[in-house]
Length: 323
Image (cartoon, rainbow, N blue to C red; front, side, top):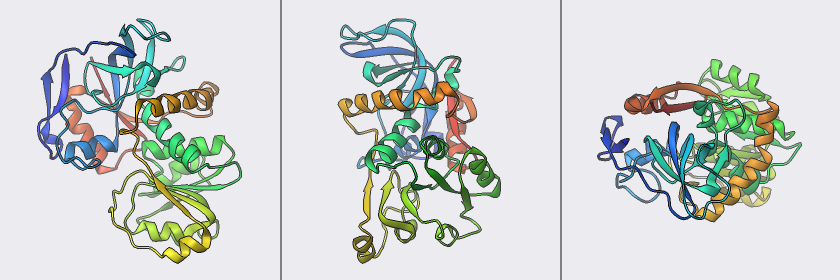
């Protein structure tokens, strides 16, 4: 099979299309003929050697989410059968024609949805559900801010927050992107390149903030939070080091948390997938929530897809498609 491999840490040019053996499904795993694979910021960081504590290039193909058809099942798989159309959260290997997935980490592709759109779902829905609704316990009637409102995470978070009766707010890097966020359901989106989001959103106050910037945003986030507010990190693109007033955290009883989805164990991901299927999939079927696909690229143009993601020009998800 064809697979996109990281030859060494570095820029998009280190991606190389190579021949690899097709994996074999055993135990609780299923083999999926991949038709589309979502691209995520984590892929960029892994390629650069900046994801988690490892600075080494990954030995397996990149790719944390896929959509395709089950072609083989392990001996302990009961839910899925050969021919089922599924999307799945996987540990690695999505940038390839075939990939293995834990059967409990697979979800049925919603009726009528293309493989490319389905490949936009697993990582974003599970990340948002885990961090916003489980970890930070966002509730109906609260105010919620997501930075990077037009990212894959952002468009998912805005829609899900609105669906559950939350007032969603966002930041984005252009007036066009801000308009998109507001059309998607955000009460207000602030262009962080021309305005100070703290000053613009201070009259509202936030109960929950989802941030992948870090750096100088941290102190502003804390000042923006209401008493008992919650701040969650899912990346640190603006810097992993922050300075803030601990007394403000204490006086407002603020909870600061964060997580990485990829390193979590199989049992956690299985439970998370089950919750997403229970709470989010009905919203897809009802048309209340939809994935936003910006552009798809053939597998051999993965480097160009990475360059697009790094440019931050996109609105929504970027996907690789297989022949």
